[in-house]
Image 1 (cartoon, one colour):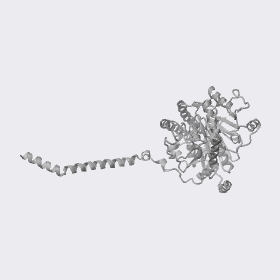
Image 2 (cartoon, one colour):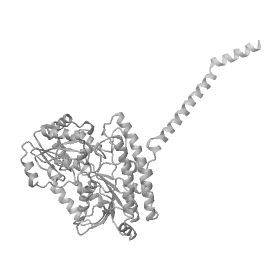
Image 3 (cartoon, one colour):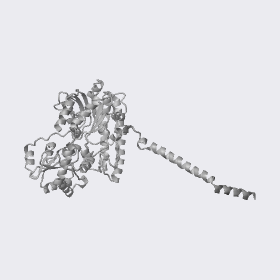
Length: 513
């Protein structure tokens, strides 16, 4: 069945003409671009001419793949984020997004190659832009007069809901940076409201204004960025409802979660020997490319090592400082590890992770249960999704100790739990079209149908209509008029009643007497 679908898809796509596609990815985070790179190279592999503005130029690009490199202008983000979670860290995250968004825009727009590209009025069939901490790329796309497809490697940011007409209700929609998932407590809902206002205020009144001014210094007549953002044809989100649950997305928001995961390759060398000889299986530990494991407190490292000693499984830990930990019979460490190949190995039984979206989708792809320890960014929301979907369990970093971590591992290592995870993984793969094919299809669709808008009417409804304030006002006026009419009628009836008339006559007679 899958072979038939693939063959049909190849026949359909073989008739698609070669497109000129521009990708704009100004953010300097490695973990984001690792996801986009798979999509961009696939576009080139399918015969499209791809030009990419990013901090990550290809070393061996295909002949039809061209880089406009921003490399070296900003230090690439890697292994320098905190491993502590607090209100202070969330507040600082918003400030980080604000100022990196401004910086990313300035670095990109002042690049000579970018300016030459815009002034040359190059013809592109579609422009693909990252949706994260800046809308600056929409200004470039506008000057090139090309339709836009948005992409992200994570769940929606707070400022994406309104522009796309997606309902945001704190009672059931996870907030990017906070715990609670789809079942938050009252306290967590209050948190969400306050932080939602905080993040969106900074974005609209600092980042957006700054980017608008930056673009105006180099290019004339750029409409408001928020308006341009609302005009994008599609947004390809790194969701899939099997993991993140059902969301109220309009038709132009397409779920493509998991397209970056490649086929696992055989391990080699000492790592292969370590994994193959693990009689009780292995557990993989990694906190991604942004969080440095050596920044964990001594107490937390000690708790993890105590669990390593107590469980019969062997452990593989992505550790960035070999002087602190050395590989031994139970523990293998290295600063770089082939994560996909490890997770795809049949001996891998569990994954202790920071709940980054990349690693989470790799784990669900291979059916490996997760013990999630979310820290920052979208990790708290991802951690909740991991638990709610049945893919794993959470251990908050504030609760990380030997007892809690040991209980979490024993739960996910249980045979019944692992069987459930395999079922979740099977459902994850059961789609009408593979996610990478879906992402490519809707990109080509946007280029083929440039005269159509796929924006939901919900995105343009004024707030007073959204909350029925005008309808409530009409009904309120009607009720007031109705009540007033009833009261007036009662007064008239009382004044004309027989009792009242006789009282008046009697009163007149007594006066005459």
